[in-house]
Image (cartoon, rainbow, N blue to C red; front, top):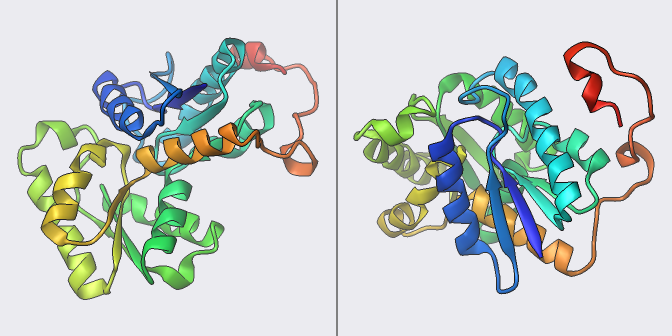
Amino acid sequence: MLIRVINPNTTEFMTRLIGRSARLAAGPGTRVEAVTPAMGPASIESHYDEALSVPGILREIAAGEADGAAGYVIACFGDPGVDAAREVATGPVLGIAEAAMRAAATLGRAFSVVTTLERTRGRAWELVDRYGLRSVCRGVRACEIAVLELEADPSAPARILAECRAARDHDGADVIVLGCAGMADLCTSLSADLEIPVIDGVSVATAMVAGLAGLGLRTSGRGEYAPPPAKPYTGPLRTFAV
């Protein structure tokens, strides 16, 4: 079974990190393919970035369909393009924010999100509400570390740990959700330091998609997630017509 994990930005080191996390979570008989779109932003830290990442995501979904992928993970905490991807993918599609938040709600009475920049907190709260989890989310905290600095800044792990500790001690969170795919490799050390579960959405989403696909389940093709109506597209998007 093939699971395609899509890094919606175009930064290769993040795709490699995401791929490692996903492969560790994949069960026997599951092959993970982590991919980088040929088009899109270098990182996703704004609504503008999210919007311009979606064509690249959909191109990777189309490639996965041609390769027979059983399901897809969209590895950005804003869950960009998930609805559109569900309209055109055969197998289940899951964003890492939805996967991480839903998992966190099963592991404790309350969770907090620790993300990158202050400007992304509003989007995280929107997703908390969309997924019906406002009653169990205690807070969304930002480390003020840009996505591309997560690897380059040696102070990043300590700053992330400090916000996670504040989420535990001041928010009252029983579980921490990491709000960026670029933090995926910190889960083990953070969990050990904090002595509570710390969730990376990449690994959880990969396991969930593999589980759903293994059960033969897929997104419903009825109503909103039915295939989009056929129509012409023009300009640079002309090749995206379904």
